[in-house]
Image 1 (cartoon, rainbow, N blue to C red):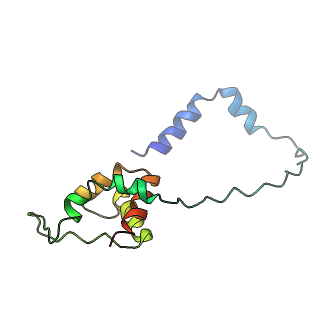
Image 2 (image 1 turned 180 degrees about the horizontal axis):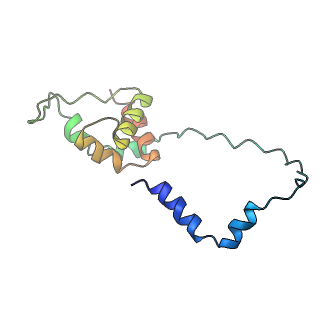
Image 3 (image 1 turned 90 degrees about the vertical axis):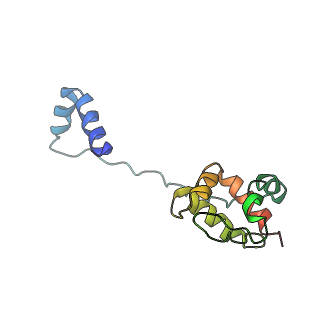
Length: 131
């Protein structure tokens, strides 16, 4: 069952019957429309700027897999990718995709879900400086 149509039905059921009948009766001549004031453009969203020092402390769990040379998981067997020195944009995008579920890996999804947008920017800023 879809929640939005159900919510719309419940909202309509909560309206008094007099309000519904008043909406159905329209006057013969429409009321004059006043000019709306010019809408101001919404403020541009500033991209988050990561703090590498904060990112250094947030990446302590990353070192458990990504910091071990030649580390492979037992099941399923795959090599852990190198994340140090990657582009900050790539790292932030990857973590955001893990957080939303667009990228699949249970451990990474769990890790990414615990991070805020600012945490992800900080982690990406730090890891992009690691060689």
